Length: 155
Image (cartoon, rainbow, N blue to C red):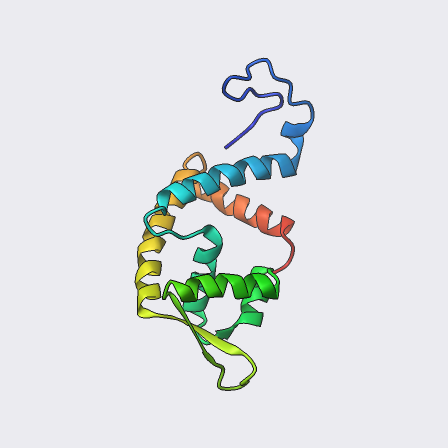
């Protein structure tokens, strides 16, 4: 999604956006809103949010991961991690098991139902990504990801 300086939105042909179109945050928010809307529409049959998708991906790639490390990887606080895992566990997608190395924490793993949903969602997310990036060639996509990751800070 590109927004030129003082570009009109539908129904706002004479609307003055002043400095907004030149602000990184404004353009990030507009792009994020469009991406989120497409994601939600694309995955409505899976009943999953972008955040939940990220959690499932990380648990699948790091079976036995504990909630603290998951939160650190995603940049979210402990209470948010607990709430997300509670929801996913309640849906039968994630299981908590006592961590073998630390009985005070839980090791997370996907259930069979979670693996099935993630497999289905991955294909939908790939199609979603292609749609939202359709105006960019592969070099531009890589450049955008690199620039956005620099704005987000070191991983």
